[in-house]
Image 1 (cartoon, helix red, strand yellow):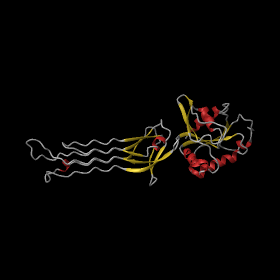
Image 2: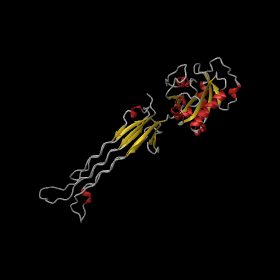
Image 3: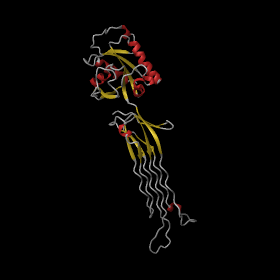
Image 4: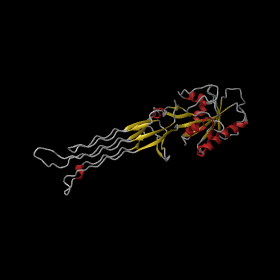
Length: 324
C-alpha cells in the first residue's frame, strides 16, 4: 500500500538523575562524595532510505519512545546512556510540527540523518558539588526531560521528470517502456492511483528519474479526483512532461486545463520547464493537425507501442535536464 501521509508522536528519553553517594572504605570513616552523573536520554533520529518508497511502516507504529538514561552510581560512575531510536523514511519525506506546521526536516538526500527529538542531559551527581565550604553535599541534579512532540510526515516524490496528463493519456505505458518500472496499465481512466518511479538510462553511466503521476482532471486543484493527493507529488520534479492523446480534438484547451490545475494548486509549478508530447501516434489520427504545432511547448509525437519518437524524447529530456 502506498502511504504518503501520517502523524506520529515522538518522545526522546529523559536524562538519568545524578547519584547521591559517599565513599565507604575501611579506615576512611568520613569519605567524600562519589555520586556519578546520570546518563543521557536516547534521541529520536530519522534517516532517509532510498530502499523505502512509502510511509506505510511508520504509519502503523504511531508512538516512538527512546530509552531513558540510567541513574548515576557510586564510585563516580556515570549512568548508561539511553539507546536512540532510528526511524527510516523514503527520500522526499518532509517532517512538520503538527501544532505550528513548521518544517522540522526535509529529507532530499539519501542517508540524510536528522535528530528530531534530542534526549535529555543526565543530571550531575553530588561529587560535582563538593567545594572547600561544602565537603559533604547531600543533593544531586535530576535528569533533564527529553524533547517530545507530535509530527506530520508527508512524502513528496522526488524525480527529474514528472508526467502530467489526463487519465489514460499513456503515462504508465511510457514509463514501463523507458524503465523497468511496472505500473498497472489498462484502457480505462484512473488505472494509476499512486505515483511510480522509473530510472531511464540514456547513455553510459547517465540516467534520470521519471515519475508517473496519477491522471489529473478539471477541478483537481480543489481536491476533485484525489487532486490534492496527486498534485503534491509534482512539486519536487525538475521538469514537467505534459502528455495529451493524439485523438484529442482540442489539445490547446486540454493543455490549458492541465496548466490551470497546476497553477491553482501551486503557482510556482508553472515556473518549472515544460515539454508537451502527443501520445498514441500509432492510432489513426490526424498527425498534421496545426492545433498541435501552434503550442510552443509541443515537442514531438510518440508511440509507446511502436517506440516511435521515443529516442527523440529521451534526447530532448536529457538535454533540457543538463541546463536546469
